Length: 95
Image (tube, rainbow, N blue to C red; front, side, top):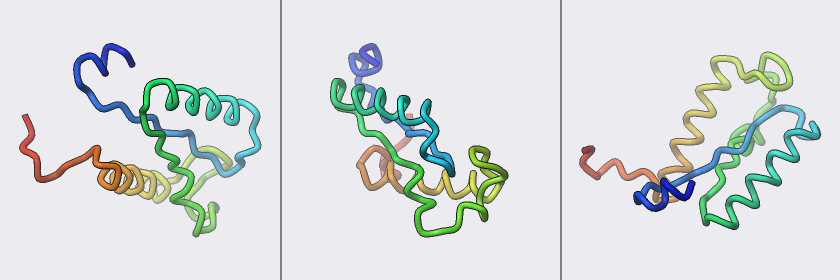
């Protein structure tokens, strides 16, 4: 993280997304991401939020593995969050 920041990279964390949010390791993982976010001022993208208005069964094969439609929804959500957060500028020329 420090190397990336020293080199001028923008860092972003993506929080894990699962149908069942009560899984203890997932809560612990999110706590660690929140601490890293505070320490390094890196945004955390909460991809689980893209599933809040829909039935998870439409997008998941089980409680943690997205189906193809779920992966597409995650990709679309990450893309939108990066754009809204100013972390992705499509007008900028790629180098």
